[in-house]
View 1 (cartoon, rainbow, N blue to C red):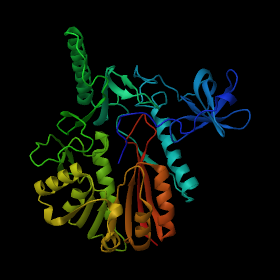
View 2 (view 1 turned 180 degrees about the horizontal axis):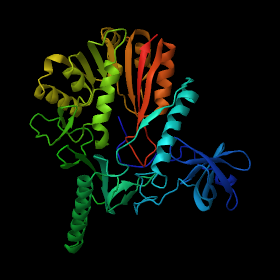
View 3 (view 1 turned 135 degrees about the vertical axis):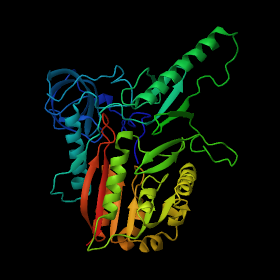
Length: 437
């Protein structure tokens, strides 16, 4: 799973204590990067300071200082000593738009930071010992990679939400989008301006629904065509007679239909590499045998399901999203793999037969949302999971929590690597293969 470009981070959960604010500017040395993307340092009183725009090794002055009980948040003001990793952001909207956090940070430094984010999470939260260097598979391009995005339309225009806010920041370009998606964004924004101008030129009348915010979903297929659909909040494709708009992506020799409300990994340049690596970890030889039966939790449209079935495995795929289920069923039919995979609908966490299902498999593949595996699912896997479990994660913190319990239940980490599906953003995808001890 992965975060779509749609809004900034959720902001500060603890209200700032203005009565205890610092007077003036404070000079600080940035010593690290947080998992949220901020630079990290310490104030003169020892409190941790999260600095938006800070880069390790820099000495900066702080502005917009907000003091909380145990930490301080601020933005970079004047840079006193710049890091060699600092670069000029190519996007004119950087710093105001909520989409990117790291356009001021060189790409090699981004990869190193993500490697450290994964390691820190696994050691601090998971209590795991990671002796080997963590490999991060880079994106072939640091810009022009994003094939999936959500845009917000309001009276102000079309764009992304301001970080930590519900307000919309209109944009007329987005450098991380693939070219056809960026062209679609420009067209949508132009259409919005024309509609606004026509409305202002018409006779004065109460505007029904004025101020309403509309979300749009953009998805590019392998033919470079970008489909832009109004978001239905997960309702797309539920009606029997509703014609489903979709695109097709080609991965591992399979053609997969993707509907607007179905999830698909955002980085089109790494689709093939991710699918190939996941299948390789699933099929790695263990004591002279390879898995024959798999269970996949959170299967989505079949991004990994079809390549595994094509290699001869029999499987069970569990998914709850209706749009993804419709795409998965269609993709299996079109590929002639219906007999290879049993599709089960509903929430993984609610299944009474979950333990029996995973007991029957040689391989368990999980690709949960950012919240990771719920406690009931973790317990079932730890107690009854098969000899091999392959875990695809988009959040190192929840991954670390889950791995701690799975390792306590008898698994050990056999392979670990990251994928930079999100250049210019702190998020990192992690692929882990677990084997029963």
